[in-house]
Every structure is written in structure tokens, then in C-alpha cells.
Image (cartoon, rainbow, N blue to C red; front, side, top):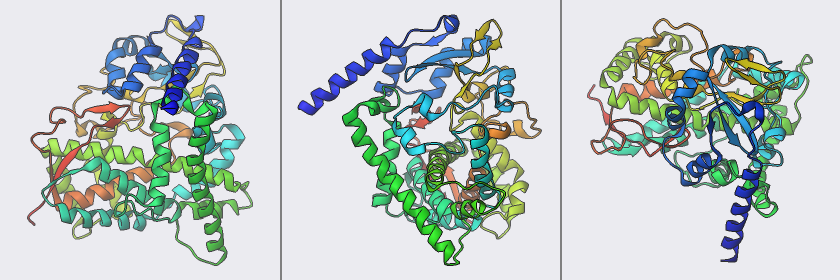
Length: 479
């Protein structure tokens, strides 16, 4: 009881602290705001809607001004949908450098876990990380993707024609694939989701999903901080041990072709500067968080769309069967040849981008945007969801129309993986994973939505891009 009272008092004090620092800078006063209490209630009450709700509430201002502002962990952040600024932000890293974790989240769980890595770094530090990480993503071990995807097919054999919660299965699958491809580690999440390795990983992800931590900064309170950091350190130690074992394995002449192995080999290149084990661990951590939930969400929403758009499902299946023949999964050459399936994947990522906004940047000089002058030092981000749903940029933006990507062109209106030199390193990783899983499922199953589904009219979200459970039926096809 005393502990509960203490937590309540701490939360009240944090609300007061955040509100006391809520003052809007004069330079940003004319920009439309999502208020502190609106964000607070939405976060704590877990009101449904997520990015779609933000966009619908602020659509008038996004379309007219190309910008709104919101309050996050003591700072006012500008969310931008203006396409000209989007292009500048993607191309000019000198004017729009990344905002470091020790600046936006000092002494936080996120800073302790992710530190400085290829995503959260700038200038020469970023180039050093990029030189080591980039080669690892050039040649991906596709056989490891297939190995785990086939394990999913074995599990689905046992639940033929019965509803399954697809989001849970996709999260378990993508964690297993990531573990194998990133550092040849078997989380075994598909078969044993309660094992200690999965538990350690999920405990840390729950920390980052907790609004009391992500929004109210509960992880900065000493007692809470200690409890949270204990979970972070447990997973950090797991990653550090994996790195040590990988070094021993390489020294003994063993090779698996996973990302960590390729990164360690890149460190041996005399033209590269080495990354320390701590830096390698921070990169593994960011690869995991960037590649797990995002691809799981992409696969979940896409399977949902295929379930309710049977014509698209059948057309994608016909292409898979025609091009792959007797092959279960696509060869390297066939990945590009699956043109319609790739259009379907891109359209899903447009409708439901797993990341609602790009990693925060900070202005190094004043930015003129229509009637607003945004001063240097202001944190900014592109609101990807708003850009990809804008009626100015997309005809019938709320409709699922894969054919819109038949003659695609680069104009910064599709930013599921960002763009420019800071584009997501793992974009090809995610696309390969999605194609392999979809080819296997489309070949063997017809996918449908239960009649009583809460998603029968639209995909409903709890918050951000986190939907309510999605039950789908996988019925084995008659050959």
C-alpha cells in the first residue's frame, strides 16, 4: 500500500514538473498545438487511434501549414508534413542533424540501452558506425530468414481454419528471424515464448512502451530508475556475451554469415575504425528495436488487408505461383521480379507506416516555413503518417490501392524507411523478410477475417501504430 501511495505521489509530482516546464517559446506560439493534457490523457488512458487520431485531429493544420507542435519530455517538438522541408531534412544532415539521446532523453532507459549507434549519431561518429554496419546489410543470409519462416508454417499446420491472433505470431516470428540473422542467436520465440531470453527482451520493450516512462519520465526517479535499469542491464549483458562468444567463434574459424559476424570482420578492415564492444552492443540493440516491432506490424497489417481485399490476395497469389513455380521462397533474382507483391507491400507501408515519424532532428539554423520562422535549436521530425495520407499528395489516400505504385517516382511523399543518406539501413532486411513470409503463406493458405472481427470496417489501433488483437483465419488451399 505504501508503495502504491509513493508511486501515485511521484506521478502527480511528475505531472506538475512537466506542466511547469510547459511554457511555449514565443517563436512557436502561432503553430497549432496538441496540448500537454491532451497528450497526457491519451497516453495514460491508452485511448485508441494513434497516428491516425493525431492526423485526423490536426489534418486542417497539417494540410494548411505543413506543421504542428507537441510537448514531449520537457521539449516542444515540431511535427512537419511540408514536402519541401521533408526533402531538405532528408538531404541536409548539416542543417538537420539527429538529436542525440543524451540531449532528448538524458539519464533515461533509452540512453542506457541504445547509447550512441548508427541511428543516434552525427558527423564523423556516424560515418564510423556506418562504415562498419553498412557492409553487413549488403549481403543478407536469406537461408536464415527461410529457416524461421518455415517453422511458422509448421505451427500453422496445427491451427488450420481456426482464428489465430496474427500480431502475436508475427512478433514471435520476427524476433526469431532477427536473432538468427543479426547474431545467429535462437530466441525460440515461436515455440517457447516464455523462455528467459524472450522474457528479458520483452521486459525491456515493455519499459519503452510504458507511457509513465516514455511520456512522464518516470525512469528519471532514482528508485524507479534502479528497477528499470536492472532490466536494461540484463539484456545489455546478454548482447555483450553474444559479442564475446562471436569473437571466440570467429577466432576458431567458424562462420555463419550473420550481421554481427560481418560487422566484426568490417572492424578488421584497415580502412575502417573499430567499434568497441559497447558500440557494437548499442547497434545490436537499435537493430532489434528497429527491426522487430516494425516488421511485425507491417506483416500484421498487410495480412489483414489481404484478408479483406480478396481480389488483391488472389492477384498476389497468382504472381507468386507463376514466378516461383515449385520453389517455396523467392531466389535473390525473384525478389525484384515480384512486382505486384512489392506494390502491395509498399501500399501497406503507406497506409500503415510502422514508424509514425522519423527520428528527431534539431535545427542548426532558423527555418522559414510559410508564415512561421522556426528558430535554431528546435527539435523537429517528419510526420510520416501525415505525409503518406495527405490528399494533396495521394489520390484517395485512405483507400488500399497497390496499383498506385505501378509507376512510382521519388518525390519524398513515401517515407516508410526515410530517405537520403540516413535512410533506414534495414529497409532491404524488412522487405526480404516480408516477401519470404508472404510467399509461403499465399502459396498454402487462403486468408480471411472472422465475421465478428472488430476490424471488419477498419483496422482499429490502441495507440501509435499498435492495433488491437487481429484474429485471422488461415485455411489450407486445395491444390
